[in-house]
Image 1 (cartoon, rainbow, N blue to C red):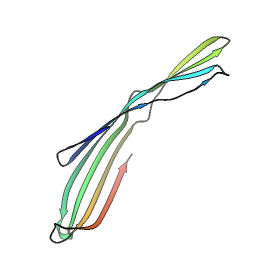
Image 2 (image 1 turned 90 degrees about the vertical axis):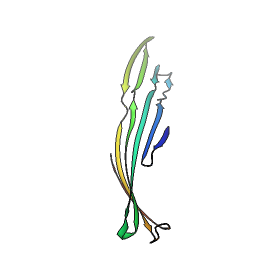
Image 3 (image 1 turned 120 degrees about the horizontal axis):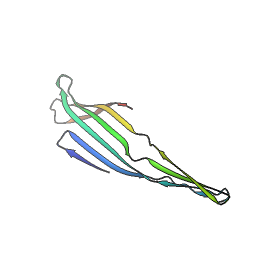
Image 4 (image 1 turned 90 degrees about the horizontal axis):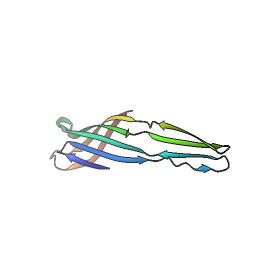
Length: 130
């Protein structure tokens, strides 16, 4: 995968995946399965909105993000059963779960009155919707 910052407030990310299903062969039962891999992509965006709460001497940072996972092809499984020397095959496609996630966070960092030195007090509040 790869990510990039666009300006000071945006982060974008993209990842590619190959999901394969490994299946063995049962020679005693004359049964085998093969799988064609699924090609999947994940993508996400973060947006940062900085600000200050001057009366409380806090610097805050709001971040909102959204991601989409497992977008792509289905996994295809082909099964072969041999009975009395005759092969019988069947195929099925297995849809993989897709996820849309969104979340927000707020980080508070306490400031000194000079507003240049930061006091090491930080509070991070997060939330996520699945």
